[in-house]
Length: 494
Image (cartoon, rainbow, N blue to C red; front, side, top):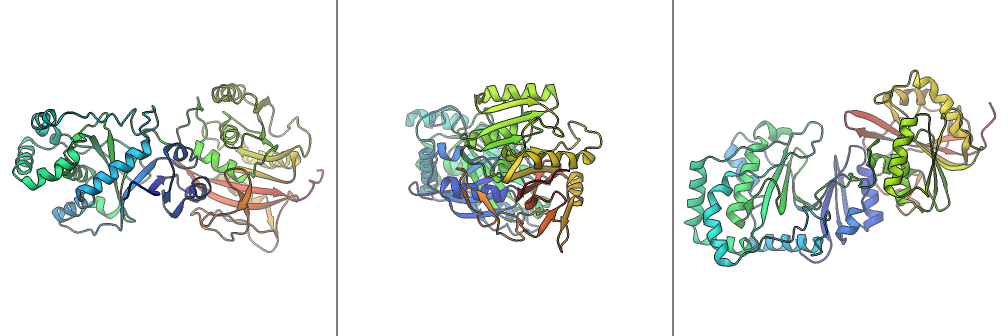
């Protein structure tokens, strides 16, 4: 990897959000070589940390070091560990280039919160004499430490803290290192940085049946200490090395930011996952001067994400719950959006709003998990009818539905000559003829890989609305579906 030119990155994403993230990195960063796999999007972009931090549909962002095919699984643990160590053992120039790219991304600005740790470029430099003395004194202690931390775990995957290395093994490793002059020479190229580091290891699939995350983390950590002379630090490292091994690929990366991108500093009390809320808003085709409504706004997460991304629109939120409206008001004030978002107490079945007064309606229909609604499926037709009334012709409705509510929605759908629309859970498209907005709010063609289905012949019992996309997404343990509709004519009075 060269310190000049576009960097190679990958970003983790919730299941079902990979197509949204792929579209976003192309539109926002001008990314190339975009590759989607389950839970990750790989891409190249000439972007700085400020631009990278603006990504809204991703979870955690990494500088990509290695991406290989999955390791060959065998019963020989030693051989497999040797192959794993080869992922990180490189010529000295490789790590010098990596550190250079890492520094360039940090920009030498020392801004708190912009990097893996606060002011990470204060690399604890010492004089050569001090370094040699400290290295001898700390060598055994460093190699006892194992570089790992508990990380965000995807379903079916495991991330654990590796075991410590025994005293005898530590002494053996230390002696081997000091007896090999060529190895000392290699260390001197990078050891003068005196970086502290840890390794986060995530292991799943076939390889997890042979090797534990502890064994992998320990092997990778020792290899890096011996080659680079870095110091292990579990609590507050300068650098974190992320290793993910599964049946799809073997990936090594460095997280660019200390906290996940999905952690929004402007949301005081979290409701719906911010990445899902942003994805829903991105489907609503919000434009300058648009009026946008969330009739069941809860804590206002959807409105906050939309107003932050498309600030030239006007936003309204309604809810029947006083406590939810109070929480939403706190969030809005924290985000400094008091002049962008209006709140009112009202039932989604009887909104005190004029007909055809909004350009977009976006809402997370309660699942009955956190807030139980009796017979919520029976209320869905009334809620949808009210949404249909207040939306303008040409406007969009974007809804987040649970499995049960999805079945109810499909029962409300009448298709001319076809079955009810099927949810697209894997991000692939039935037909890719629909339109969706770019991140700046201007309509543009849907990027490759974005799962959308559109069938103009499909008509609902709510005759003015036509389906314009179905997306399967994950909310942790709960599976959900984003439904998009477009209003094509004035609603009939019923």
